Image (cartoon, rainbow, N blue to C red; front, side, top):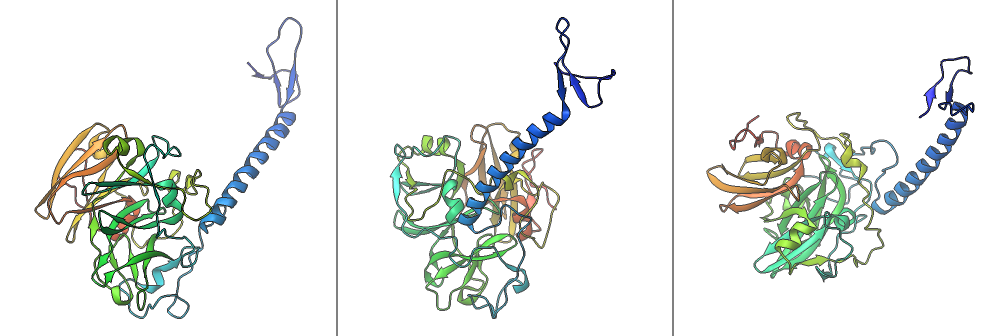
Amino acid sequence: MLQFSTSSNSPGELVAPKHRSTVQRFSWARCDSAMMIVVLMGTVSVLVVLFIISRQTGRNLTGPAQATTAVNSESSDFDLTETSIPVSQILRGGPPKDGIPAISKPQFITAADADFLNPEDVVIGVAIKTSARAYPLRIMNYHEIVNDHVADTPIAVTYCPLCDSVCVFDCRTPLGDREFGVSGLLYNSNVLMYDRGGKPESLWSQLKTKGVSGPGLDQALKTLPVELTTWNDWKTRYPETEVLSQNTGHQRDYSVSPYGSYFSTPQLMFPVDHEDARLSAKTRILGVWAGDTSIAIPAAAFGDADNEIESDINGLKFTVRYSSESKSMRIVNSDPGVQWMYSLWFAWAAFRPDTAILTASSDEPAKK
């Protein structure tokens, strides 16, 4: 073991323990130089990887927080003359309209052929009637929306990496059947979708689950049951599941997550208009709502043990099950009218500032 020398040796030297009469000295300067070279090489490698990923996503992951450029009615690709959200808070996310390409002709493979997935990989799970499909986040990171048909139901599987938010919509909207794309715009750090082919096209908020501009203004989207869990958990319960293929028609390295470091820090890339310190900003929650009443359910409510919690919202009952193995929550029973999605706490609270929180001490939600 190296020991710091307090004898007459030169300051800053490390002296190895004496073996017989031999003393070996190590210079801090030499160690610093070697370590500096290693650190610089590692930093350059990381920056190169992040630069490549940034080029693929269109977001600046190698620099400081993303510049927050607001849109205006004149420069926008969309008609913003009438909106339900402040135009000054609609921000450009980096990529332009369709710069993050939604998938509209998805291809699927069997579970046995999905060898690119690891057991712990996270997937969005959708089960309608007798059909089950898994949409890996490693693919959704680069596309955010998959327009699909499951059991003859047209759906949009949506994921916003900035909010880690997942919601599945029925594409049969009050305006007719719609296909959704990524607008390149954000509100409260959350993706704004647009309906392709709309005349004119409307903007739709994922977390508001409704239109915010154009003909779709204040029109609600119908949500469908969804799960966010591990690949191992999903395929165990749905062995006949289909899996979204990496053959998307786009050149992306789906083995690398462009947002890996984002989830390990409390910082946000884009501002929100309401902050709530009741939970850490990036706590993952299952958000449940009925009408204007909402509840946020963090995994901590289950004490990290396999458990079920029965609760109610606006007089409607629902049951949430937690798996300690997959670290996932899912709704297993619910009355008609109960809706849910997954999100990070900061985003859920920004859109629903009056939300209650289900705590570990009781199955009664704690109100603000």
